[in-house]
Figure 1: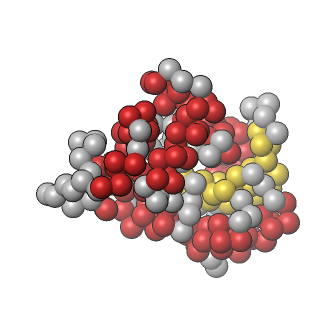
Figure 2: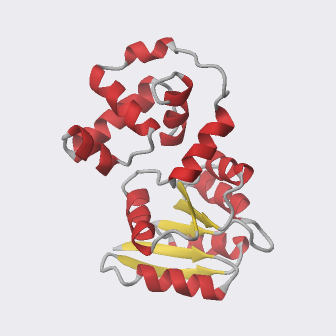
Length: 212
């Protein structure tokens, strides 16, 4: 059972997320928070697997709450917000959010994202991924990092797919390999290129001209 804490300052939104999630046999909403302070407190108490975190909340915003939770290693955080402003996206991922989706996401995609976060993926809507890449990549220049030579041919293929924003499940399907093999390749890519997470891998792939 995947235990989820929902943090949003609107009760109606929290109720909607609860309804969507608890229709799934493997998902359980273990608590609700109406601001960042309560989100941190409940997370420390309940130790959920995933926190759905709004950004704009009173007392402590979602980005500051996410930073505290990630730093303490308490839970993975999936940011859901009505805002796709570049600064919000970049700040949320900079402090360690495990994914960033807009609140108009389809229920099926939300459920998939929660499961993906638990599996170690970093779900980003295509719009969000484009904004992150645009924030970090100089639109005119491309450079080739010598560290690319550390990658095997298969690892390079995986890096390209990470650059396109594919999840582990999608990489499995695209390359016709098993999930354990996929996870090994992704881990090797991050380690060999000294990258922290999949977002950095996506940016790296674009900076080095592997993805248009």
